[in-house]
Length: 85
Image 1 (tube, rainbow, N blue to C red):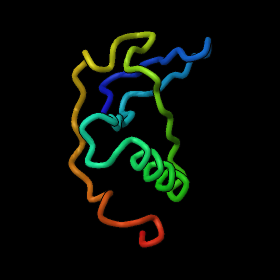
Image 2: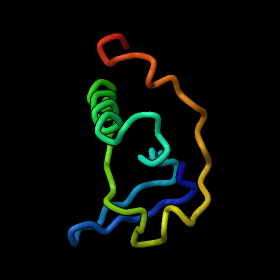
Image 3: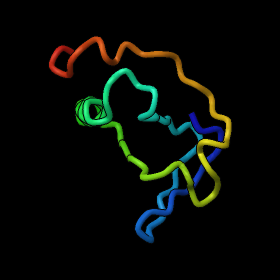
Image 4: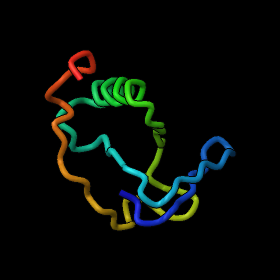
């Protein structure tokens, strides 16, 4: 979770995200990246939460990989399907 706001610059467009933004890295997940994308997209649609994917961890302000962030508790997100939620 981001401890401060940050700005992404993609395709010459800036996107600003507030402190508290939650990160979901693809690397190290129990599912492949396509399954992860599909699951998060389904949950976002179901809950109305905005989701944005980054091409890189390098933001306009800083590198997200170099800045400490607060890990959120583990979620049983992989234990149910969107239809069951």
